[in-house]
Image 1 (cartoon, rainbow, N blue to C red):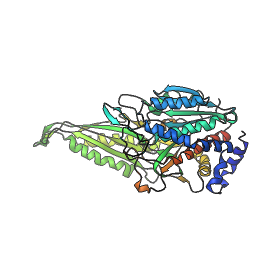
Image 2: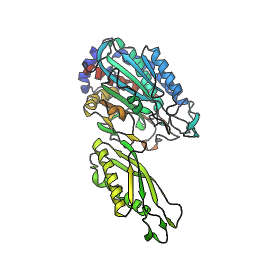
Image 3: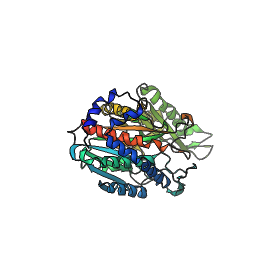
Length: 443
């Protein structure tokens, strides 16, 4: 199958104004036909994975399913990457760049409450307690989509202009206590090397975004996320004689209030939002004792590296100086356990992909979207290579946005009739990058 018609079409894609059905030639006709035939298989994979969810760093069944599928396609397979991760390498018949496509595999410690015939009833141990387990964030759909992309692209390997790395990642939701994992560990173990990756793409399904639609953001798409701990030390005293001590509770209250000025006075919110949240404060044992120490912990979110650096600096300055002004001392730890960089969509690469997304989705179905202050560990990949992270709609047409259940809840639900759009979007972005960057990278 020749890709020359596809390359010519890529140059004209911005002019396409025909109805949705007529958009399909944005992919080679044989590839479109192959993906269409895969639709029911992709849905079946998704439902099987949904019914058998596995927690972070425990995705053994899912990893075996993926590895067996990739091997059946003649794709080189690496297993045990960052514990349970799977990497497939598909080398095309022609030289060209190396493109990484990523799907996350892990489920959450959430007990599903749906009445779906493929509902999860799984239970497992999580941080020392038994929990229900379900795919309450849609990672089951991501795995099934990328398995479909692997099938479609393996069928055209002779004409493929470069190499595809299919990365099935464990522990996106974070590893269990005392363990390492996720994209950061995969990068450390070399998923961007041998061969060297030139560009990366990922997607996430959205329970409140309309099915059969795609969503994109240029620049920061998900925030950096750093947890912090501030320990304020004073001098213990009798609660009836507070002048005999230094009250760390009062100092902590002033610190918390002052921290809110970071987002209201230091961050240019017209450009990027930011978050400074104190999520827990702990100190004291009874009503009539001024304690010696107070601890507070929270999260810091930013959508640009410079804002992230500014927030970290201001938290340290405010905590130590306010405490000092009240006769106490404060120590600041950033991060404590969590340190995700900004998930950054390369603006130039995003601009090149927008016409492709518009053509794949059809008129009015590819939307610019504002960034969000959630975090995503694909950020560790996007920090190393030019990347684009897109959204895929999963909300059924008959459900209003305000009625859609949230991610990470027992009621989470997505319409899997839109999974083929995810397969087509992944495939089209990879092929377009290969066609327009023929000299990047090497196999």
